[in-house]
Length: 232
Ligand code: BTN
Image 1 (spheres, rainbow, N blue to C red):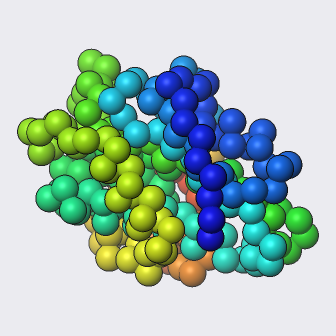
Image 2 (image 1 turned 30 degrees about the horizontal axis):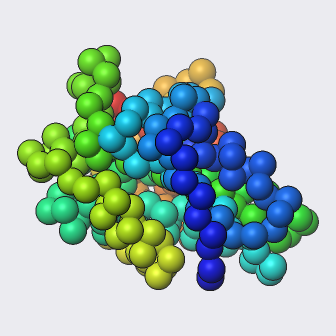
């Protein structure tokens, strides 16, 4: 697939910019050196100081079944993990969309899809990866960066190229090999309720499978948050 690329020093949010461009029906990669209104999942903000990699990939589909939407998340998360592995790190995916290294979050992914009936008409895959940016003090116990983990300043442009190469090649099948916390006891937060469970895995549609006191249950990403002890 061919993509046009647009680069900015600062944007409010590369996802918001890419979403505005959906009507043009062209594949687009949007990259910003910093974001002033970076967005995370579940309405959270995403700290986006200079030195990190903030990009969104807008893909317009002709005939992509909505039932396969999870492959897009698998591909994005695995592309980040393959890139970090090449930096000598050991990344793990915290279902569905966070990447952790040594117990701290290094990357978040926000995917915003649009649908037309049973088809996916476009997806915006937003990736925020902490590369050389220094994290705010409030985040330093829960978040990390490539710089902090390797002890080296890494060229952001190189990480960007590698990540986009993996993304465009397609590495969704590697997702399972990076999935972390399987077999571990976690806390599931479902609405107001919290319960202990053991993570079993993820099904083909991207739902979480967990062993709870009521037996094996399946959760969609929108209905549950997973607390692993290492925080988000
Ligand atoms: C999360 O951790 O909750 C997801 C964070 C996603 C952040 C990326 S940075 C590039 C793109 N633009 C945004 O506003 N968000 C995503």
